[in-house]
Image (tube, rainbow, N blue to C red; front, top):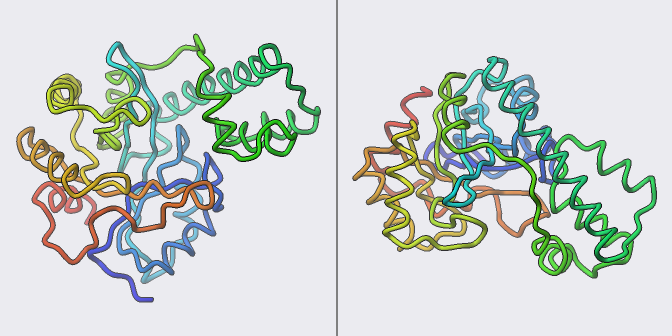
Length: 286
């Protein structure tokens, strides 16, 4: 299928975080999907982007370096997408290292809670495989639970056991994450903004408050088109993006077989006129 310049997907994950496609397989899938512009945004990691850069060939879709960083403040959790940064820049390396260490702490703590609170036991080979991963998270632990017979499905493991676990692990504040992205030459964009913490759907007042606070810290864009958004929700975010003079991006949040979302499933099919915020964003990488 030829690339469609109008079809973009700037939010997807590889095996470097919690996707099921290797970076090479993900690039091949992007080619097959006919996507014209893409970014791989693994959680708290940049390795896949480096690998894909080496694999790109003449005529391939336009690639934008990306990552998705987790943060939390008194208003709850949020994810900040970063685009166009230098993956070898000191501020980015520091950010990746810090969040990787926190992610490992959380993985250890979750497994320990499952063992102490539920009496689960995991074979050494399963634990070793989990903790040798680049960025183990809930889906990886859930899959381990299924293999060990403690849940029927990954979804059951997450909803019944992992989500209720309360951790007191450290985290970075959004202003810290945004500041380091900017220092590394990147563009910080708020991922799936309306969903706030987990699946919470922020109302207009809370969404505006969040954008006011984050733009004051340097946020430059919002993911107005997202696989989980309705047309009405995307319209809300487009209106807010225009009001706050923010860039606009579109992302599927593709995770391979770990989710049912397809590549390119962003809510923006590429045939409609691009909003000004999206045009300005893409122009940065021409």
